[in-house]
Image (cartoon, rainbow, N blue to C red; front, side, top):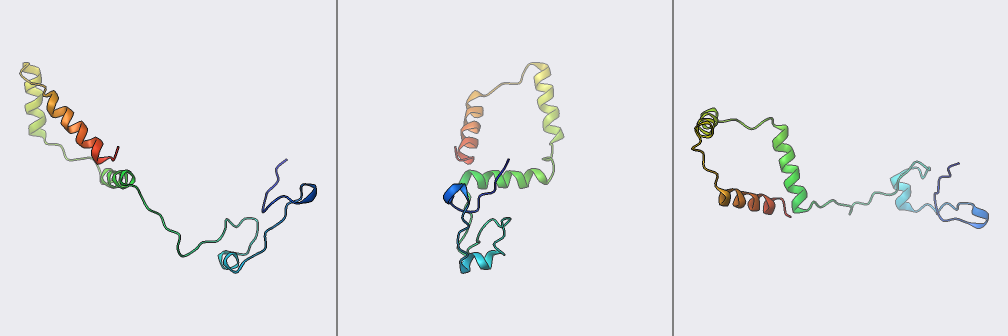
Length: 104
């Protein structure tokens, strides 16, 4: 059994409905399906991390990043020839930069 609660419990487990204010009257009919009043002062603020993720999401919706085929070919040749040199400092710096951009 489920019971919808619209206010505080009264005697004998009955639910009392709060009085309708002018603010809730403007927000809707006051029926049980109403969520509540919406005030003009309500606002949403995103954190830096959320903004970064939003930007990333917009960028990825634009499609895949362009691929530099010549660079891929050069890197592939270097790996196959055994001349590709890993630069751990550059990788670490890029990881730290990304971490800072994401706000962690």
